Length: 166
Image 1 (cartoon, helix red, strand yellow):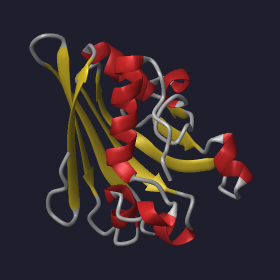
Image 2 (cartoon, helix red, strand yellow):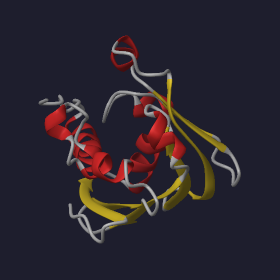
Image 3 (cartoon, one colour):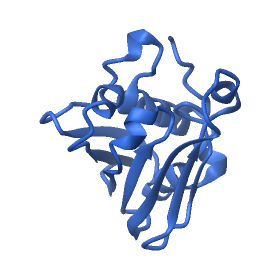
Image 4 (tube, one colour):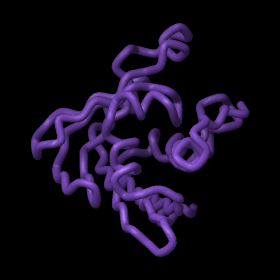
């Protein structure tokens, strides 16, 4: 996984899973609770449909708002591509920066390995960029996209969640 350019972060991970399994893990609430930070994501996968990312019970108990992230679906082509807007609501200054654009691209490979590329255009998001890059992991703020994708890969390949080391 690599970060390119200051304003656009691109991460790629190879997962021993089908494109449909990866799509379902990203877009189905029951799956989204099992990886990353454990919050439930709810999508209306039609263009213009709402995206809502909820904080986990643990995050809420530590003072996070119930609704952590929101956005809108721009493009949905299951199980290949999802483009959406994305706004962090857990911090007033990050929320004030407005919406960024998040793209998931899922491509089947050989031998049952599928690539998942996440591109997060963070232009105008000076507060959100370091969080999503994982630069704030040592502060307890989490490991950003690298953590989320590592957690997703581990879950799909082993059936068990990856425990946050921080």
